[in-house]
Image 1 (cartoon, rainbow, N blue to C red):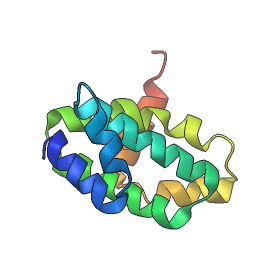
Image 2 (cartoon, rainbow, N blue to C red):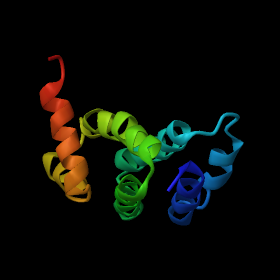
Image 3 (cartoon, helix red, strand yellow):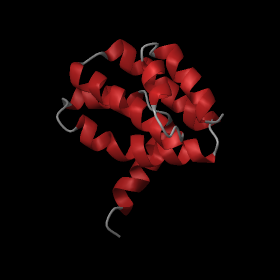
Image 4 (cartoon, rainbow, N blue to C red):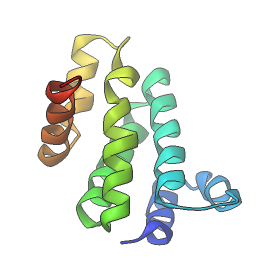
Length: 118
């Protein structure tokens, strides 16, 4: 899957995001994942669990099926921002969010956390 297919996939879950993704002057894997991540952050803050969990599942699928650029964008954008995005969540809500993230992405998150600053 490349970033154009990712736009289609994301638009299935969040139809109103398609126009925003297509308006980008320089579309790329990073811009697509960055925009998607911004919406996920809003869902976390607004406690919109139903749509959030669908989006997390879609992010898992994009990572699993994505080309190398999408994978790298997910790791550098989504995974890197997870702790910041969930910092003010209750422990229960944070655990629930992480339970909807694939084991592979959780391992990458752990690697980022434990290798930071070394």
